[in-house]
Image (tube, rainbow, N blue to C red; front, side, top):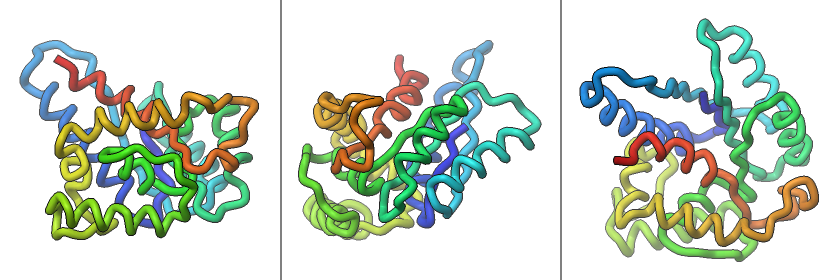
Length: 199
């Protein structure tokens, strides 16, 4: 299960794009397979509240989830580090972004270690979408096919490599995610999902 902090639709659409590819590949291709169950819930709320919402979803679920990921952005929330600690303490994996999910999307095209405000990442994505004629030529938060758009030119593998490079110096338990700007751990979640798409 993936539980997302998202006032916008970008994160759910991105992960639903991966989910669809996994379902398309596994469905009908292999006769007996332990298919991953990927539920995606978008919740627009503060970071610590998202941990509580995730816990409620898990308790009320009719299935037992084995791998629970929470995706959250730093944005301007002051409880970012505390939410990550609380989520990890409950056994959840946290795919965090500092400043925003748009930094993760940017890494599909280029590397950057510039500490920019979240709106600046949107502007950079505007330039990329115009240059490569993606979507309507400008970045919008509501592209239902956002995963396919940013995966043009092998974007997912590029993003994973760029994120690994950026996060190589991050010391979990020592460095505070709120101080690691820009930063993203979304690549770990995407790596875990992409395993199901390998030949």
